[in-house]
Length: 282
Image (cartoon, rainbow, N blue to C red; front, side):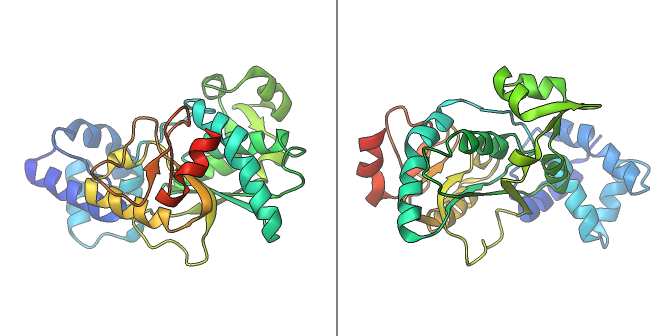
């Protein structure tokens, strides 16, 4: 059992290191996810792991604990609507702007987990090449979890994972059988660049994006952290750019740096000055 003191300690550690706001009553998560971490580092149980964390823990141990507590729920073509909006509106418009400026379209998938979202986008880009008029699309995918990123880079998914949202024609086109399930083609994998990024940290100063996906991750953060991340993402958006949040996520009462594009846009937000542009196309 997790003692109240240990629960408070680990909650504070997770909040500081990863932004995860554990909240009350989540002892069962610690009890289910941390025993394997304790064993990996030679500790008898969670209590011994907590003692080590309170002493002089290595950065590797703290990172492993935070990784274990991260929820990596994802699927191909999750929720559908954002990808329709991406294909019909955002990518063609961004390609036109980028070509005029002599640069690629820049897209960021934040909290990309095991890769299904960025690879969904890569498959969409692959089938749109003629429509994009030769514009290159650079897809940057990031996550806090090094284990999730390793799986994403490998591009191997089991039967259950490919059955969750992936159209059968795309499975046949872009995947081949693998002993563990199905392996994504190198052509699609090579369209995505992965980086380990903590959303709490400052973003690289050179970053600017036409499109950002940050879906279903901010729900795990408290309001001040949500505001900080959204505001910093908004500063990365190029003119006309868009930010996708989860379909049920809102910025009301949190920040005014972005506003929701109404209609059937699938959780699309943009800077206030760009809202009419997106409404016209939505």
